[in-house]
Image 1 (cartoon, rainbow over the protein chains, first blue to last red):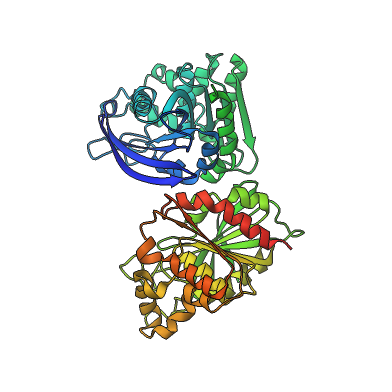
Image 2 (image 1 turned 30 degrees about the horizontal axis):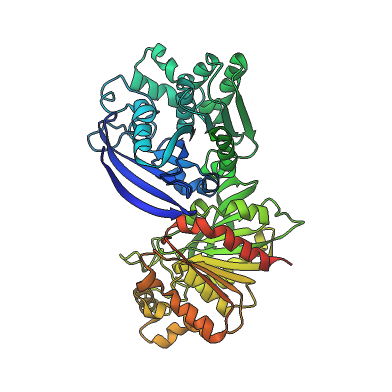
Length: 279
Length: 279
């Protein structure tokens, strides 16, 4: 596997770096960003938090806007931010911001024309962590988090791979994609019209059947314009109550869907993950 | 004066807001952003830090990327981020990123075609603070800071108006614009070829003649690609030594010109200003 370095910036005595590499899962070049805290060295491998971003985002939004590096540097946690879909001229796309490039929804597509490239689930669960752990001074202690579409991705991947992640968290996740417009549009395109194939990617349905798994922290802005129609955190809460899942869901008065919201509470998420990432 | 609200986001229990208004100084509509910490109320007016951004920036870069709101909310400091030039179809522009819109250099232009709009000095020293203090629950305790072109602007304005600002700081300022390519290009266009007119806008020349004024903090990345040719902090250091000016200049090993650098040290700048902004 060949990594090409794109950029490097010193940040809080650690390093922010962007790389591109060929992805076998996605059949195209992919870009990711990594923040390595100052503690990371060949003598001290540090745990990793994977951050999955929302619709239209790339590897850059979280690294530039969340303000996570300050506390991650203090806690000694690396952060990896992948892109949100396969990219490039040869990769199928759609005119909508909520389908195609920038909108991979973290699934393995089974339908044409998407199935040759849109395999973000495999990329995130297998290929990318293997690459990260073979390349950088990080351990196999992993956590996963995300925002909106990436909140759905983080919780869904955490629920399906409980042994791989110590903890998981989300801001404003698409909690029940099978029954909201964003999820229905994406799942219909990527997975087809048989909704039985959608269940494995629906966080609320998975949590209802998964009494054990990584502890989960979710923050949701009460003034989020997508709250009622798209995000539906009450479905997640009901699922956790039904199965006894360890979910802490906070509704935050006055906060919206933006990175101003994420930045306001990212420290609490980092401290939550740090507790579970300790040896 | 009529303010039009453009956006509002809750942030660290305070509020980030964008407004547009007609500027008499600049003869066009202008946009600015303000962060109001949770302490701000009609019963408790809070001090204000004015942040001047660098080339190509708008009111958004600092607010989205610096991570300043966390500590500003704790310290009870409002932050105002203006745009970096007049804007609009009727405002003269240049093909270069370093002249015209996005590159006002915080001067009052005297030369055609710039002189009708490019009066950022007057806008920042008089018009904008008057508007801010008449509209929001802030006091007349002011500090000023900025980055690159905005670092030049902050130090230059602070030096020329010592009674108006309690403290001033800069990241990677254009320290001696009269003798660097960015400064020479902008000053030639805005102020004409007579370099006598440039002196009033050159921080190093002003500091050499100003033994008293707001205490100054400057951080400069040692790996900044613009360090030697454009920024020249040694000129500022020499000027402070010559006049005994209270300047603390830190060279930061490994850091570059980006917001990753600013974010890494913004807390130290906020604490510096907080010390001087106390009653």
